[in-house]
Figure 1 (tube, helix red, strand yellow):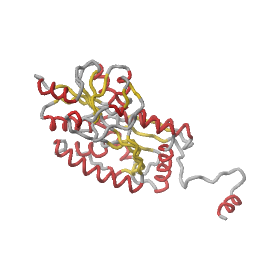
Figure 2 (cartoon, rainbow, N blue to C red):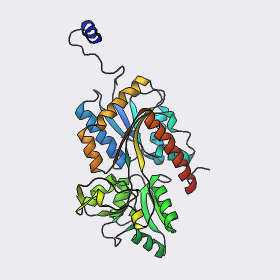
Figure 3 (cartoon, rainbow, N blue to C red):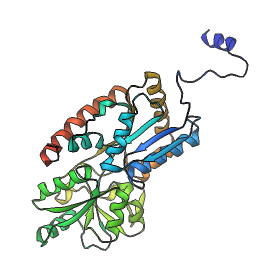
Figure 4 (tube, rainbow, N blue to C red):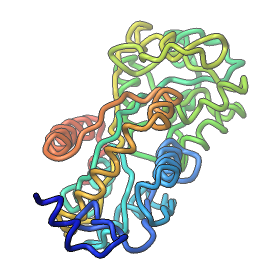
Length: 326
């Protein structure tokens, strides 16, 4: 009956809105990193999917705000409370940047929309390097006159935390070199300016395919699931875990979307529904496979529960590494 009543009262040719609220101007996705990194690639993939499938009538604009280790972008969203036309794609940095800098910001200042995946980290070396395993790199580090250089994205963030864990497990020291993005870390590795990096799959994929870099191992408890050949006749699933090579370090990070705080439930619901649709498209599934992301969609209470547990884990890891702001 409800359906007939709607049809009766709506003017001819007018379609009932699908949501109680919809965007009325361009939507900005803030990326708290430079162009070329995994977060930027994800945002631009999502932008293309939304526009291709017309999940909204409004344009999607990706804006990079990498300054201060991502704090610029995070503060921009914090200051945009109540603005339903802004989103931020973020990772574990949503906990780590405030912890490392005393930034007066917490993920609870935002409105969680959806977690789209988890991302792995790999130990990458220059394609011409002699190392065949993580054990070879550790042996070289222990025998080096000066600490070997390992590149990563930002200071006191995910990559830096992994290098700290490597030092602790292996009983050796590295010189960690922070860059503004994984793309830059890959470029520096391919040019021979660092000995290794700890990039996500997406960040070194082009240089692996181009014969400039190669992965030694994945920082995970299990191998990656994707069996399609990628480069050097290898698939992501062929890459051994670092633990199997004597380097018992495991770390994954969330990839999620948030809105500013103080938005309405209807505004949040619009974006949650939109990202759920994005996660179900063949283009998104192709993107996950291409970049070896772990499919892990969560929204609502499931996402909030994950965030609370992940925040507690990072507080422990950051304290152990000495990365917490005094």
